[in-house]
Picture 1 (cartoon, rainbow, N blue to C red):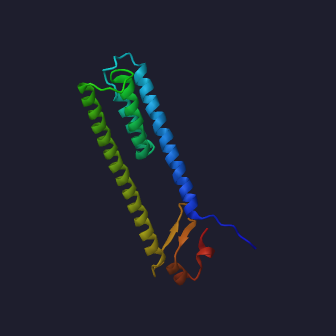
Picture 2: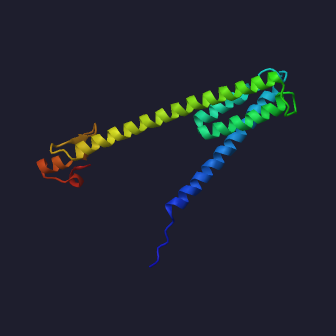
Length: 175
């Protein structure tokens, strides 16, 4: 009998490529929305040219991924540069250069802060998982009987110590 197996590395490569494509598409769409909303506002091109792109970038980085936020920052910055700095031109005046540099600095700071926040949340979540696994290992390997019941008095868990003390296996006692 021949069993076909799929290599896990190939599956992970496909999933990573799909996630990258999704992040790029999300970032591009967020940049377009930010620029479109800013373009629709009745402001001159020189007033707040990158403000909504920064907001969209922060929202995408916080709720989707930091990588999608970086894509939003890049495409949004390029779009704002072309549309709002000396409109429809890639040429920058000195004042425009300072504004664009400020945009880059603010975007980098916001993305760094969000990346730090997301990584600290991930570490906190891993600590909680490790603490729960440690407690479960202590209970499972304890020589003392540890039994938990629901509010209705139904046995929900039964460890080896309870089996040694009462003589019933976990399968017999639970439920």
